[in-house]
Image (cartoon, protein in one colour):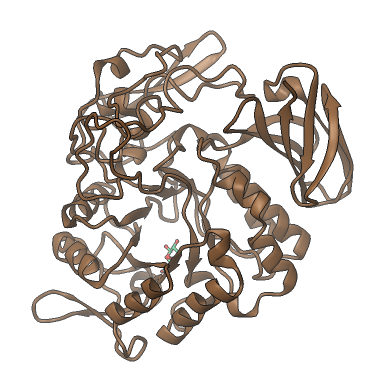
Length: 500
Ligand code: GAL
């Protein structure tokens, strides 16, 4: 498929035509309707959007009717049709590809975004299955802190315990995820085996332990013959799932797995849809997180032959993060223009969090603020049993997490660059005329940063301004707000709501 940009007035939308392929590999999702993108939009990958309505397909550049896609299962269509004029940006999010029903449709075959077994959708008026990944996932993953050799069931159990004792679970964190290096090849029947010295009690028992705490468990695989640690790190027991998708998906379901990270590792892009379908066929809701890139160019919503929202619940948009400020900046910049692809059930993934892994406290807070305003998955990567008070306060800040988890599901974007390395980001929030705003100082000196209501698409006049990190109302302001002395490498995160 090739994406075609249609420009209408000041609005730009992305449509998909079946006339070629975008980035390298030429494979459409195997069970996705060939023209789904034009109508099913944000709801595409939820397994319900396959039979999209013509109302969605007839959308024209940015002017689609608000019911831009198929279905009537009662999930509000927040992303269809024209971009809200108050969206504070310059490009449209609606119209064709990404406009459309979230969760409607009539038993389509594409995707796997519902929490139930292969979704039937239909017009049940609100009684449809819960949308899987309706807000960005929150959890913990073993890789950043434990890498290959440190993974062990005692570590994973201690993280699950820490979810409870640190307040992480109460803050919304849910998934406890094993990354690479959990496995030990396959048995004589071709079934994946776990590494018995790392997981002496077995993964089903670990899943039970995690479920017993009201949490969920994730696991890692690849669409190749080896995992990435197998390919690059000499972990020969790390075997991939290619050619074994049905068996492996069933194995994961039988173990009680709730989340799969499927990491390209030089596999074929076309294999992502194969695993999507295999997971869906298990009937177990398994959140599907993919990494459709390797060392080279990544597949992103603005440049990929895969229809990412039709394929997975989230996808990496860049190479691995590490705990350095320059890396945080690299991934923010890589994610900046990708907002067109994000919405309930399908998210851009600028990679896991490095808060608590070596960034200083100010940078850690800025990192977390930016992931929140980008509606990024909040998958922590630090040792939760050894967090200092600041790291814990950062990761569990309810008002900041609420920005990330806002049900409207918009990814924030840059709306102004008032100086070198100074950025104003805006994220439309649910409610009337509500925005989360990040005043982001990327420079090496403190600076004063002003946001104007016109940049946010808010009406002129008074608006309430709340500082989310300070948990403090700053009082009503008219037309603009200035934060003076925004520290280097920091973010002032605000919620601005027009006063009726
Ligand atoms: C990389 C991936 C990392 C981690 C690692 C495991 O490809 O980006 O997040 O999963 O593989 O080998």
